[in-house]
Image (cartoon, rainbow, N blue to C red; front, side, top):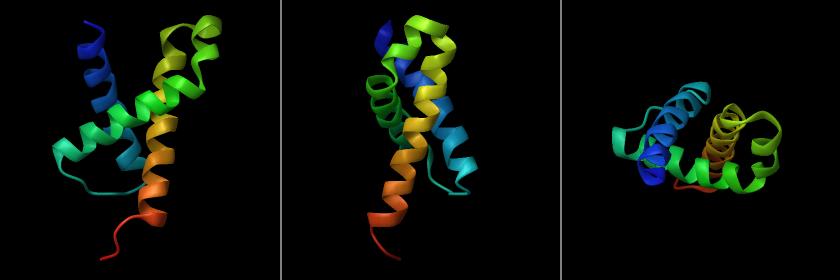
Length: 79
C-alpha cells in the first residue's frame, strides 16, 4: 500500500510540478519526476510529517519535484 500511495502522490506532484515549471513531459516521465521528487521531498521534509500530517508530505513531494525539474532543466540534456 505505501508503494501505491507513493506512485499516486508522486503522479499528482509530478503533474503539478511540471505545470508550475511550464514543462511538457509524457506520462511516464511525469510520474517518475513526481515519485523521485516525493522521495527527495520526503527525506528532506520528513520532520514536517510529525507536525502537520500527510499534507506536509504532499507539499514536500511537490517541492522535491520542483527541485528535480530545476536540476533537470539546468543540467540536463540540451535540445
